Image (tube, rainbow, N blue to C red):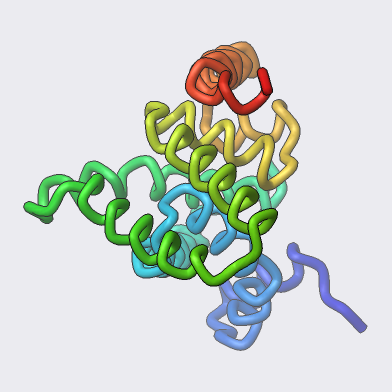
Length: 188
């Protein structure tokens, strides 16, 4: 019999680590997907993933179950995503643009071997990813959660602890900026 989140939470609060592991297993793919889409860097995504579950572990005793567990954990993940970039700027002396250049070089080297249609598809993907990187952290997070993770506006608002109107504003601004940067792709 599959246990509910509520049952696993209660068991985890009572010190059952296997129950906590089951909770992690249920949501780990979603958390890593959010982090991966936000950072575009596997190492950073892993850091965000780890920090998210550390915070979940530390805060589980205070979780009141006034919202769904999934909403609570995704809120933590979004907060970690938003603070991760600022931490990285303070710690690292290497700009994020330099890292992106290395990725682009590798992708272009691999693309040379692929067919023309695959290359064109990769170029479009790179352009979209580059345009995504030019968004503000909150715009990027909202755009990613909505368009890559298929979350509803209401759920994103809960995760980000803001009003639905604010989420819509971020999404609208992100979409407008992306359209401007990618205008030449859809005018052909």
